[in-house]
Image 1: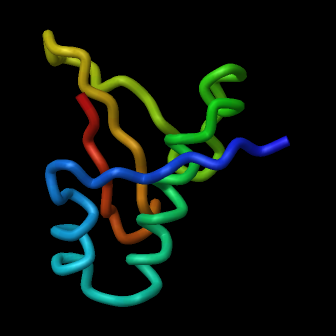
Image 2: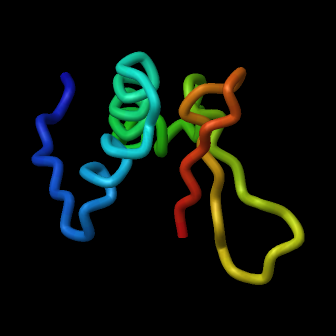
Length: 79
């Protein structure tokens, strides 16, 4: 059963993304990507079909890249 979590935008990231993203389709895709990144089942199985979450190579810090939309090139970088 899915667990309901409260989405907290402590740093205003979601608010800023809603101002930057050019159209409603990308805004919805951004929220879907966040939902997948918050899904415990995806982390347990290490499968992220929508965002294709993976570690960025060639950087010393642990930085991960998740696609909002594969075709347009919009991405989320998580540290």
